[in-house]
Image (cartoon, rainbow, N blue to C red; front, top):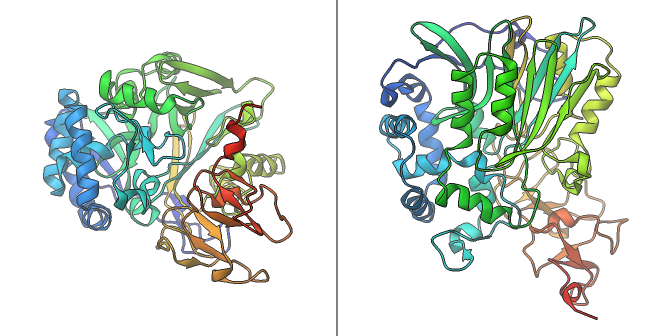
Length: 480
């Protein structure tokens, strides 16, 4: 049943950064695990179906359907419970089952390494070039980009608050599909999860109780070459269960923090990811590889807080410097921005923590959902904030102002969209390998601006006077 309760937080009118509407409440539903799986999500889909149809009409075309049909054919059916849920959602939403099946692996596919145009599919003998209509549009945008910021912070009594920003591509549509579902069995609450309509996987979750826990999922990009092939093997050869469904079953079956952390640490996943978990006066960040932990960060007695976004900062991951989704632009670290603000804030409430996390130093252009929860205090406060990308985006090859957002999330500097003195001379889309990117004023012949290239690499080349050629320098392969 759709709940009418509105969090007190939604009534706040103050905004964390300058422009935009007031926050909106998150729609809430009760989902009965005793129901036939084919009908569990009927009410959710019916409520959001107009937006689902708009999303399908915008992105689903013959090239996309060709890809999803291949995915569905070579993946095969899921576990009976999940397959029944997918079948019911597809029927209720009147969308192709193979397309919905592919979208169910959206989180795993966002971990793919760039450049993304060449993927070795298990059913292809060689690296398969994407269909031209996809490769030349925005296939990375088709997969989506799931960012996120997670904060575990103690108050003066040592009680742990968990703050979560969910950053998601297609924000214009997906914020309007975001909901909270309370799963019940025998009329009793089991767990609450936040997700996207027509995507029956957990993105954020809470298991209440005296030793309960929360869970937040953040994208963790593959950390080694060969990871793309490993991911594809896990999907199509080993046919591992979708990671979001694995975590949903953990929330359903495990009622305590310690066993949940063990399960979140060890159960097989398809791809890399972060799990940020809080409990009663405790918390941990798990950096997952498909078969186990890469590392973990405990909230120690001496720590006031720990933070994770989407980058292995413990390894000095350079990609943190190229986070194009930050409200403050490329070169800004959302993690460091959050640290700075938290260090300046000795005390906080759930509402003030959420406002802090939506300041421009922390938020992304596509932050579509926020929550602050505390297991010990049985508290969950959520909202749908204003975001730059939520009210529309600019298509590829169009000039974009500093206040606009590219649908693909990528843009490049060009004099055709302004001048050196212009406030924002950028065009949506990235420059393909072999193309010339312009150097930025004041940064001539430097790697500053490599984010303009699809591969995020460039080198000096005679054929690009006053700029650099996108791609890897072929001379770097020569043996001297």
